[in-house]
Image (cartoon, rainbow, N blue to C red; front, side, top):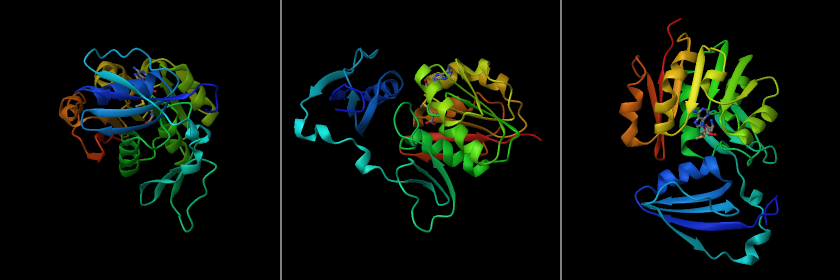
Length: 260
Ligand SMILES: C[S@@+](CC[C@H](N)C(=O)[O-])C[C@H]1O[C@@H](n2cnc3c(N)ncnc32)[C@H](O)[C@@H]1O
């Protein structure tokens, strides 16, 4: 059992678009864990698998050992070292002895973005590499609010965030009470000097005109969540040269510098 009363269930997703189906599930279900292999993804969900919009992905439910049902998952939590001087940890995990860098402390669960996903880590690494202290910042597709939290701990005092998922808006509002967190797309945010958006390649493409409209262009823009085949086409939608890129696992982020 989990914190709610739903039983954790496990599903094997097979097919060329299995990884895409996992991306989709992160947004549309309560993903408790996943293992990605070549064309096969095993995913643990808090409850049933919602109908997938990928006809070519073959689904098989796996039988779980009821003896493992008392495991909460929290026992295995550990700090996530994103860069030598940047780590993410839940509040119930202690700071590693001797660590002197930036810590992002946020609970795991509730919304996408606890620091474990490659796209989040790539976004954080890129933001960290090009950080230019924007006076205003917008986190598009904020999930838990982890990227907005980075801006907050770096001292940014005007932060907007948005997500089309109500649970994410609630999680980010709780994490960052001083930020303006909006339900909806980028058009809901105020214009900002620094902008980050971590979404799937197709979501980035669709939202790009609105993202660029919200960016003043004065400080850095970071895009993340790109799979290798998507990087060049999506990166080219921004009319500036890519200044920095990071790849973590299967996900790449790109950064553009601002013109102050
Ligand atoms: C991959 S998660 C990223 C969460 C978090 N920012 C992180 O880096 O871990 C993408 C999020 O974008 C949201 N999203 C997708 N399309 C969106 C759009 N057009 N406008 C706002 N949010 C969107 C999804 O609901 C999801 O929470």
